[in-house]
Length: 338
Image (cartoon, rainbow, N blue to C red):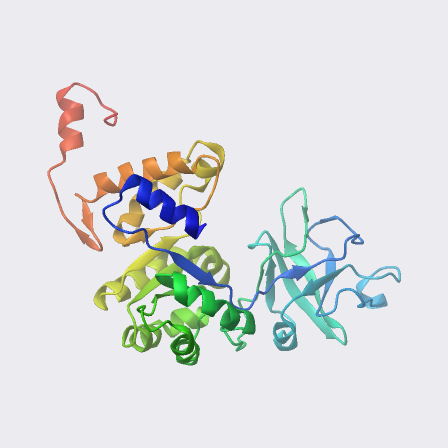
């Protein structure tokens, strides 16, 4: 990918180099399923066993089943999370598509009951995200794989996306690891702090100060994970607070997750998507996800942001002349300008 990018740069004779952002994966909290699961589709009321070793865990409990039978098993790649779960706490599966609540702790893991799922049910596949919004547990953000990847990242990336960063300790660990592998003829990559947990939001001022004092630093509002961690009704409020804080600290912000997603994937945006893209003008950067119509999404985003720049600079309204209103009504139209 890097080789193709540099070839394209030369062919297009771009005036500025294309910057490369590489993510460190961090601790992957994912589901693990056997190839042939006991049940394919899950509905509200179903009970599951979350276990660290899904291949061997089988539990027979009369009080959770009308007839003695084995509960379906869903594995979790992060055993530390299961160790901290308590009855009543929530566990979300597959980006919040399935919501569960912990019923009990058992020897093999925890038993959860589905309290939220699509009306037609939903399958649970391997490698789907798990979120624990009520459980406060510490886990090392910089994994051994990340340390191994840093050798390549430090040589080729202009920016590093730091996943699951939550505390100053995480920043210190990454800076120390970077110092060992950055070539002498290159500047260290800038840092992009991916804010995706409650602890990261709570510690954001300290994260900015600690990272920004050492390297150029930006913040990514990872709205997908944050919505699950904080609750969908609070994501709008929290992203506003993050924008305020970062503007005060002169830290650039990346507005991420599901921007014009329906357009990129299906070719036609929703009205809410366009409004969301317009709001993204208050950040310095907008992240789009891949899809067969990604070029259409880029063109629309470019147009929307260009129009919005005259209305809003970061968090400050510009109160410009309403050209669109004047043009539309001087032509006798009562709709929006094409």
